[in-house]
Image 1 (cartoon, rainbow over the protein chains, first blue to last red):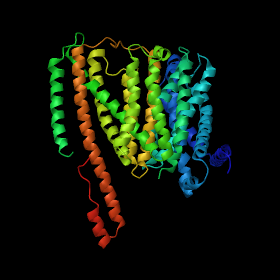
Image 2 (image 1 turned 135 degrees about the horizontal axis):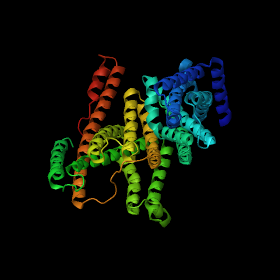
Image 3 (image 1 turned 45 degrees about the vertical axis):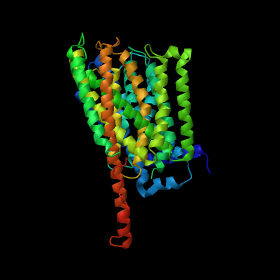
Image 4 (image 1 turned 45 degrees about the horizontal axis):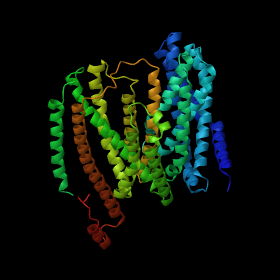
Length: 225
Length: 305
């Protein structure tokens, strides 16, 4: 039997290749978050000072909605041709599959953020007053927080009626501390009024706690029959 | 047991009436807030009851997940015992004691943590197998009702006292709201998934919700320190007469919640039995002698709970 990491990497490579050939999810996410940004620009017409205070919230709301788009096709793709059932009977550990899916989503959402963040800067005339490098740990940890729980709950919601509706209903309440950490952390870096260290620690704690919980309980969710 | 229910119902009604009388007429009027403060006798007992029910839901869910395999059951048992031991001893160590917030006694922390193994083993004893899941759904449903009462009475009380309906940075209000959201999503999951997997998925979600609670609390606690807050009267000790009435009200609410849970528990068990009986019936061909005999065998155990 192959080792844990080789199974993870094989699944991850398969997902990335699929996405690279179709580019379905990435295009949908990019266009979706572009629409959200444009609607926000029309809805709020802030001064430079105000925009620093609200941009953290707007940018993460746009990414949160776009992430849902990515998460929904994660497992739905595996339902066709009973691929998920094949996974279930295969001797590969369920954790490897989960980790591959979460990493795939993480790469996808990070790519989206890297492409969309400059647009936000242009539309809102943002200039960072705090230590700008701290935006990188906030973004990475925040994305992982959304994606790890999102991948888990997406696997859960494919077992229910009206799947697409279920995922945000399950994900958003649990994600509230992470979203608060991302938004408040980004705002304090943009305005430079408060240190963002606490929020980075909060996001790190959140990530560690829920990554452990997801990996520990994923087998139960996958095998729940 | 079936006869005990009406008797308990009458006793609970009497206790609630007595608690109402105490709250409205006996408890002294607050010097600062006037009579408005009397809503505390409904707000606070509801909150305590809701938290207790969510705690029961969490413990029942953990035990339900652990009971799948004997190995995890053993591991969970020792983990719970270890948590109880550490929680009972640690608050009395001077270094840990210094970390506790002022006004919190080590003995009260130790008793709270000790409640985890006590609840865990009591539930394992009295609610075996599928009953654990029935208990979890019962506790969650009744808990959401009491939590809703807290969220409705909170703003009604805040408006005359603080001058605002809602304080976004207030730690108790916001974390209660998030708790309510988590448990509503738990009930939505149960409603939307109607297969045999529901119970496991719901138990997993309950564990996630419980892990989320401390993170919610700390995130709001820090968020608050950065934002201007309305002056909210905290601290200060309560008049012993008020505390007495508050505890009577809590007792009455607990009895009421217990009664509702009891009846809901029986209803849920009965519903599952009916479902099982129907499934069994549909497997057998209608009219065959096997179906006739099995019909008489599938008797519903009404009452007895």
